[in-house]
Image 1 (spheres, rainbow, N blue to C red):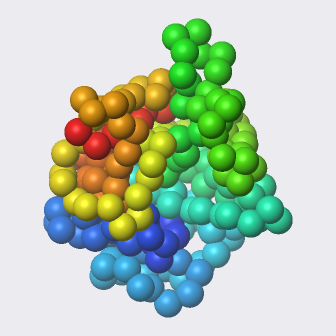
Image 2: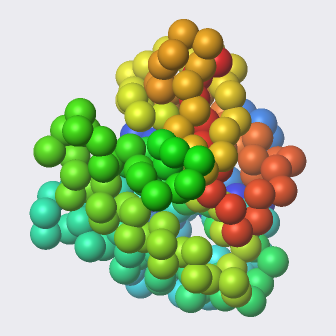
Length: 209
């Protein structure tokens, strides 16, 4: 299976790339400068300049883009559109490293995690930017996308257990009542979805078991 990881130099991107390489997949890192991931193949290109030709021949493309500052937050939507346009009408899957703020907290799907009184103000702009990207992605019937939201506590340095619970649109808690997952376990879930999942044009979520 041929996989491209866009923004493979990021924390999530590196672990997703490492997991893919360890599984024996043919992995290409698409990065804007020198490759610091485990991918043996590299394409040096800014995400905003990616074209259909760059993504031709891959079975799956992982979007591991992340932006954190106020002036770059809109790039979540802009970059996602670039990738969707490049993959429009193809069989290549697009798997997006999403956010937890847009997960629903009620059966009616009218309230999200980010709407809660305990959601930190400092993360609200990021949650809103990522939710906007998801909303726009839902309109793309021309792309075989899957949006994967992590648990609320997404730990970059968290332990690797290799075990997780697959959830859907609503916030899922584990048996301890936690919403937590490490980047490493998220990477396992991402590659499991690429290898055998069938959640086309769906948002799914993962939490540590």
